Image (cartoon, rainbow, N blue to C red; front, side):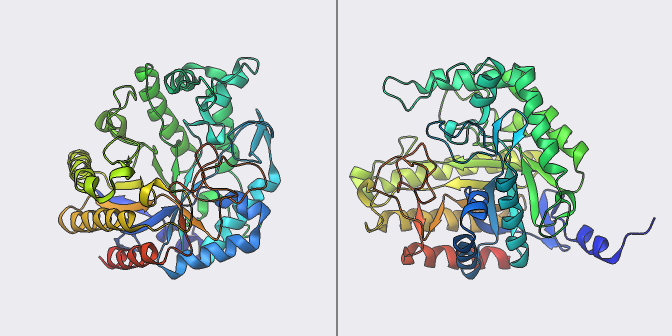
Length: 415
């Protein structure tokens, strides 16, 4: 059967991979993008602001947005995005999914692409831990942010997801529900929507002490998605070989699956102890040196696998670790310039290096109070609900940072 004209045009514009390189419209595709995880929630609750944010991003050349399309938990779940898509297993918030429809429809108008993240290792969207809790009669989640909480205990709890069949099945049910969805605005099935660049398994999944189950889950879930949708790319959402000895990741082994189309890694010099804001520029050179080695190591593995590579998260705090939007960003600007220069240089030398997404766009949103924790009713900004608000956000008034982003977005897109 012959394809209709619109279907043929659509089929020609999916982003694909050819010999280790992203291809769009028959040409190599490189980009500077951002993390815009709350876009679906804005699409449901504040359409005018969403339109403003997309217009701002489009104006500075940001066409690639990494967004969340999965969130879980009751309305009173602490430290989580609210409202959530899935309030109980199989109970989906249709108004929020229509917010995702609106987001994708507006992105389509602007020629943007979405990397759609569908789950989360961390608690700020419910994620793995919420699925485990549901599968165990709503047992208490050991949140690490509470007084006396422990991140190791939380990670061990979250990794139970991989070998909890009911939890995995509920997640697979949600995959099927979303991937088989038809946009209520464009009437275009998600599977046929070229606005979607890739489906992503989760945000920063870790193997922890369940490495065999974890790696099997990566492979089987990517295979399952490919069975539902053969048009779109699939990625892990991996943070890479971080300095943590407890994350249970192996960047090469994790990405060595025929169903995983490209490699992702994240870069957090402050979180990893490579940069101390109290020392400012005095420690920046060390952070850059550590980052250089870290980036180079991941490039080498991507070359070995011959898969495109995206640095899909990186960030730095405002000067002095201030969370006040009015504080200067001199050190952050220098670090952004370094990362973008490094990635642009690597693109020119190495075909597998494809793109970079900074963390994260806040636009016109502002924290209710600097360094506070997000509550329902507060503006969505770049910092997720479980983190001090204002930490890594890039605001619409951060003119110096935006100038840098715009410069490198143009240079990357032109290559």
